[in-house]
Amino acid sequence: MCKNCDLKPVYKTLNDKNLCKSCFIKYFEKKVLKIIRQYNLIEDKDEVFVGLSGGKDSMTCLYILDKYLKKMGRQIKALLINEGIEGYRNKTVEDAEKICKELKIHLKIVSLKKEFGKSIDDFYKNYKGRPCTPCGIFRRYLLNKYAREYGAAKLATGHNLDDEAQSIFMNQIKGNMALSAKLGPATGVLVHKKFIKRIKPLYFMTEKEVTVYAFLKRFPINYIECPYFHNTFRDNVGRMLNELEEKYPGTKQSIVKAFIEILPKLREQYQGEKIGTCKVCKEPAAKERCKACELLNRN
Ligand code: FES
Ligand code: ZN
Image (cartoon, rainbow, N blue to C red):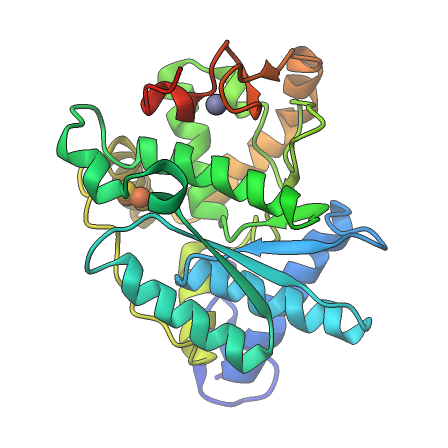
């Protein structure tokens, strides 16, 4: 029975507490608001955009931020990048449009094909590297560029605890601690006037919790995955962590909690890393050209 009200439980927390539907929803939202306050993710006059994909994570993030900010008489906006992936993105775009219409949230859609002359499907026809990596680079590039052009102070994404544990592990395997210094509930070390700060309100929520929340809230979601995702580095690390979690419950949470403890030291070490401007598109870039221009061979 639910530990609070004796109703039928729908979820068992990591510390073995059973919760019914309404207690789970309360628990979930309370925890997200705590993350927002604890890390000061949203300040008073911030114009907040949510990077929406139409999946469960970003939809949950959108829903809770909207609820939270509406209470204060404020509004959020949503930004979606349509990468052009047949049979996948068109479906999630429809879902995103549905929820934005329902919640009366202004949604901006940016087409990767319009911006770069080719869709992700077109791009992958001649691409030999790991899929999903270029897509991530293009998506982050466009989210940052358009969030800024539309006047955002913060860009919220639906990254959850599982995503963060994967990123921490992936950087560890690659031996790239500078990349890890950029993780955390709010982006950190790189400063460039064209960078919009990113925030992750679902930072401590597990993938399972987000899935249950989205399901209970009946969000209009097709639970589909990017067709290119299978067997990528992230996919494999995710599977490995799932196996560990199964054997040792709480593994992912411990990874992220331990990481948060060392994050200030990491940031100290990589603080002030210089970031320049791409000579082609004038967006922030670590080298002469940004990663998007490199991938697209733009000179
Ligand atoms: Fe975009 Fe896989 S190609 S997420
Ligand atoms: Zn560029």
